[in-house]
Image 1 (cartoon, rainbow, N blue to C red):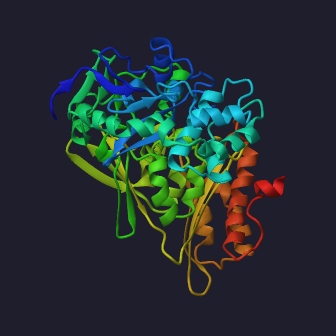
Image 2: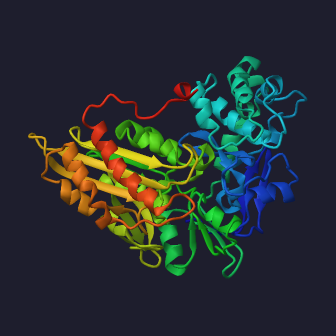
Length: 491
């Protein structure tokens, strides 16, 4: 480690920024609007749901520079060291003409009341940079995290399809500046730890994993912030104090993925977006699940490691990872231990993590070719919604058609993500048929006593959990029934 630096350094649009006074819970949205008077970035929900605050954040990845849309309302300033922040004001560059994304929104009447428009523009900009000629599905996915209350989506879709017809490189500042920005970001990296503030009001950005372990040994009660998609709401909605806060989202050691012997190792800092291609290819059932976790902005920020570490009973990734038999590596100081993921969750708000210990990686076995694996998420709305209940099923059948092994895990049914062990016991060794499944459904009462809250009643959860097992049975026995109504069929 190259010492300690007492300032955060990043690039805002075209300007170099160095801040020596930053509160651990200061958000990018507030800083942009109040400190820089960049008010094109709006405050809507303050919880990463509506997309009005969307900006782009670019970071070095390998030899390149990758931009992603993020929610400025729940993005903390402490996470910006070594990044390029781009707001809607930057799109026009130094010229008077609108950027192609902006011009398309004007020409196709994509802006109505206008409040949400900057956020839509930034989300479409991120999509356009990656996919100049996107499909309807790609556009819809990119806009999952942007809400328009004026029902302007059809006009926005038409604008999204037309952007490339306006030309690109000559009028796109990020294309023109990419080489320069890349070199400037590389120059910002000095291998130092960042520490700002004093006492409990400190903001810390470790220099690496070993430095993180050293910091946590001295500050075991500090709040670890990865993607801040959950911690951000602690601040904006619950007014909780989080200092001292340790920001780990930029640590390259935690952003690595690897595969060996059909086990995928995912570092704790890998975002949903970064993990998507590998997971959807090697474990296809996880692709549609990841696509329904928040909007694109949330997936660009949130991490699988953070989803596990916060121990939420409605976290979306723990149940399928438990069903797959995933292992978890935890680090404390110079010591590491690996445990089954399902044993990490002890009780509500309590995990098997010692003071000063942190989640370093999760190891996910790829399903055997003969196995059947599925995940079902039940929500009030399909996209960008919190889970009411989620079921994950991993089944291996013997040659005679009996159940050789089955692992069933649920979220939203108990105080922690939990296996349905009584149901599993009722199925193992039995013929995989409707009678066996219906008999096993009676065992759910032994495994779960769900609660009633704003997302679902206890009775609904209990019935839905049973029906998910029945759905899994139907889908694994060759049914041709449609799994869901498509958008075109619904219309």
